[in-house]
Image 1: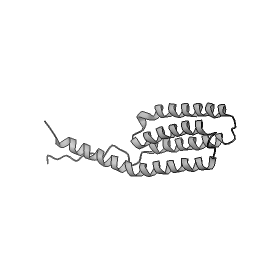
Image 2: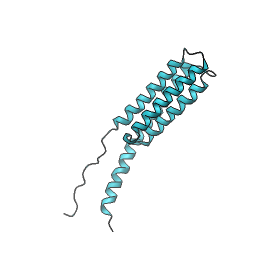
Image 3: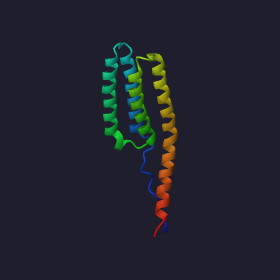
Image 4: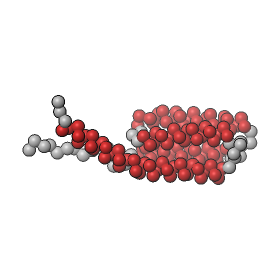
Length: 137
């Protein structure tokens, strides 16, 4: 009777906030590529790139503590770097369809990793709480 039932893990079954932030970053990334499509002057690329990189960076800083999964933080940082690089190099490789396909592939990799990583993080969290209660000094 010394053993007390452990409460269920405090982690919810899905990290919806992480997924929604990832979807939002993907949507902004795709939208930026569509905005760049009709632009012809390099200064317009630079200005829109600075605006969107600043907005995404602000959003990531705001959400950083609320994001639980490393993969989401990594993906958001990768999207910011992608927008920065694509915006500055857009005049030299202007292919909207290919860029949108790349954005879609980036999101699919993030989504697959999100589906795989989250159960592993739950498992580690449950092991940590289970292992931590039996150890004493």
